[in-house]
Length: 199
Image (tube, rainbow, N blue to C red; front, side, top):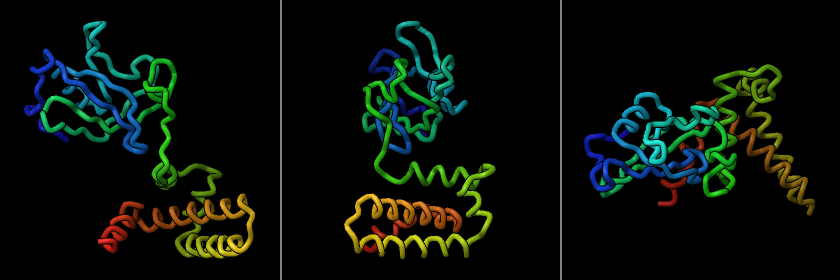
């Protein structure tokens, strides 16, 4: 987190612009403004609170809709007058009901969304969940499934059926992420190894 004493609120008459970004998809969700009180409340409660220039008061995003922005991290820019908040949105970020205030879908192309679902299943088991059945079966069963899916992908790669090939690729990726999670690792750990090899 940041040192709040370094934030320069003077350049914009007591306010700083705040760029809000989904911590998982990296999509920019909205832009808001904070005064020192809004920033302090945000850091204390871990839910983003802004200063409304229209209503001249503090407002916590989601206070009426339930679509809170849960704080993950905050960064201060090089001029100390703009904040970047990385958040977990609890629903649409725009008052219109759109995912973002820029009318973009809040979707990423990375595997973080799937990894977070799997990690959540491990931390909060759900009855009837296939993922939890795998975790309950143990490492050997999960590793076996990864092997089976890898073989099935190899077999499908010999043909030209796009749907079957991509389906098997998705199955392998899912089971691979379950195995990583079961072993206590994350995709970022694998990426670190790959970056090391690249250098």
